[in-house]
Length: 279
Image (tube, rainbow, N blue to C red; front, top):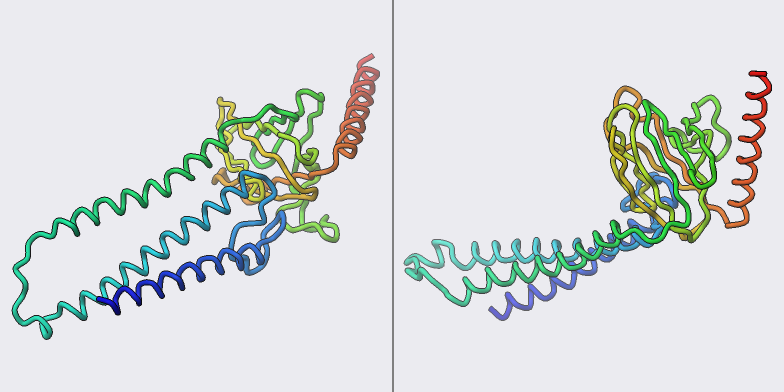
């Protein structure tokens, strides 16, 4: 039994190192805002929710690695210690109270240890903070339409075809009109659909929520770094499902104000031209 306990301790330590190393290597190989070749983990977190998701994933991975190694070691020990050759006369033991209590209580503690951070994460995802920016995203076959109701800005966001890609634009992820938000601001996104069920998914923000016809759903994020972040529709929505990407450009507050002013000016000019044409 002493050998059994020592072996279990060594394997547990190795499991922790392996799980931690896997998490670190996945983080190192994951892209910043978009997928990377040979990626082993999530994209780099760009929001507090995604940071919590990464931490929870690593935490649960370590727990299940310990469990898998313990069960493997237990099976090997049982096969070696209680085989027919070593025990020609089988034991007639039918109950072991301590063992039965242990294999009932220990899994309960494990589930509680997983449930507490899980509930904390769920609460953080659905406890919306006060909105700094409000955006409505509408799924269409097969593109997204966006509206900034407080700013009076509307536009469609359509994938850039391969022939029109510029240097540095990722294939199947770039769009002609990006969603623009300021850094470190709470963004509430309302989701709806004009036809079938779509899904607005941004891996770096930890956001993934269906856009359902006839229903307005909400999610939120707070981007903590400037840059361009890519996602895609993650609900099988028809023939061109793979061609309705999402691109969010996170900028400074000054750049965001300039972008809003530019789009408001363009909208006013467009309305003036329509009015003149009608006259």
